[in-house]
Length: 87
Image 1 (cartoon, rainbow, N blue to C red):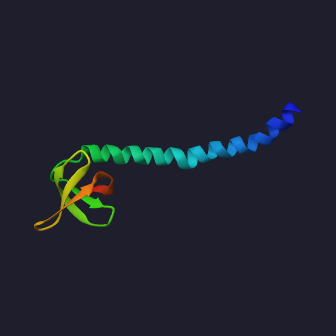
Image 2: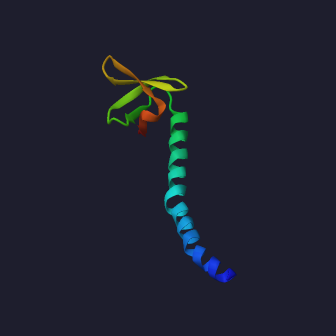
Image 3: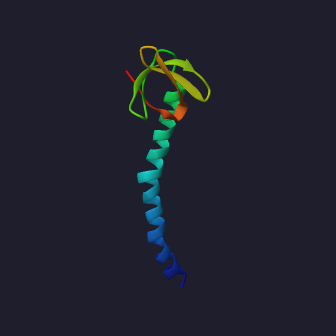
């Protein structure tokens, strides 16, 4: 009886382990890399926003960044709306 119960749950456990390594772990690594990039941003860095706009960081705040998206056009965006840094 004990072995049959273990045999029934083994595929479920295996699926959970595969799910963790194929989906959860890469997402966590990507999230940590994005947070590190946000923490390293400074005034003058070029960034791409989640909306697709490209701009230059003019102000760095704890929750919001100032981003110049055109001459004289500065917007205030939330930290998580910055998708990536442009080199």
